[in-house]
Length: 443
Ligand SMILES: *Cc1c(COP(=O)(O)O)cnc(C)c1O
Image (cartoon, rainbow, N blue to C red; front, side, top):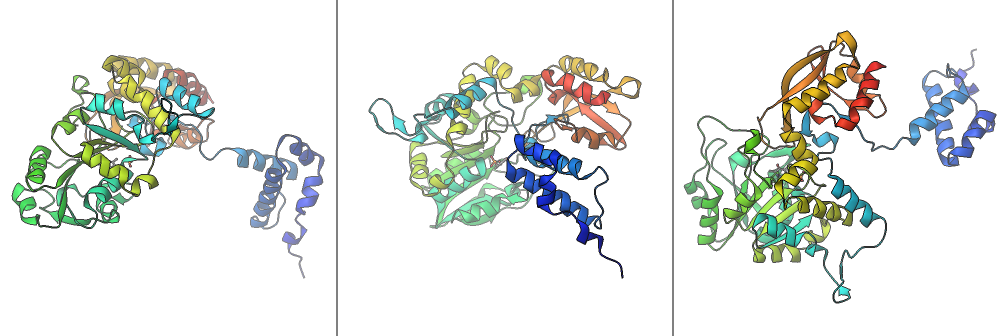
């Protein structure tokens, strides 16, 4: 009869009593070391009960290091996708980071009227700046744009119909779909038109006494070409107002200044969206706007009053750190040149290819003869300017397995893979990150 080696695994107490493990207790919380010891024993059990090759002390130490790493850590984005949703979308401007830090350090007048010494409203924060920058009559900020859309439809269409074109039933990523979000608002989704063509008479035929909102969704992450037709927001707004109902425009990206000088066109700016006459325009804070995650609603006073009074407003409210970061980001837009220089998203989108090339050449220093400089394209990402390409410079490396090793670097470096090559796009690698990437490549 053979004894199961798993019976011979050390007890947690025995592991904790080992001098090398006791030493760990001086610098790490006991709960963490105990968890690490359990993890080491569990791993040995999975391996058929054999002791770790590196020895128990080393195995526990490695588990402590592994378990102490925060689950949300910074990475270096070498993909060239400027608004990479999986990598946290917009890196923040220095002014936004400073504002967030200031507010995080202590108390703040989040819901306090300093003039009167009474309760104030967090919805007043950013309001005046948004009005000034967009030309809308009123504004408010919530947690994200999907939440803003939910709020807009709950406030304006709950119990009635929200009419939308079949060509605009967008999936916004992470398998979340606009029609599902719409349905949760309590509005009935009425689809009109076809995937490629929707006409004014399609909306007209769907209008009944139950209609509350005509919704326009900006097709932010895909393009429709060929035999297509859709109804402009100006026309939808007019049609809605003719019937005494509202027009809501889900704009998605929140572009606050025109970037066509830099080859990026086709995405409406927020002021243009407001000028269509839509009652509410909804957009993200962390896409082209370049701020923290937020959902922004701008529009008429009546529409915003309805939004503020809706219970959903409380469930999707923005936190103070977001409001501080967003306010500081918005303030930079008072001067477009300052915004372009200070807001990382705008800086990366408008950077001259020569600057990108200089950084790519610096990266090449780290790889010796195996790397090559390649001309290519970067993407905007984040469901903005779909199909737009920006000329960029890449460092190409022949070894596909390098991508995995770069991800294991501290900090992780996320590269692009194209066929059997690994590509590093210098556009999204910040100047101060170049040395870190070079030393990772050398290793
Ligand atoms: C991105 C996007 C959303 C969702 O925005 P979040 O801020 O990520 O919630 C909604 N609608 C459109 C059209 C979008 O492009």
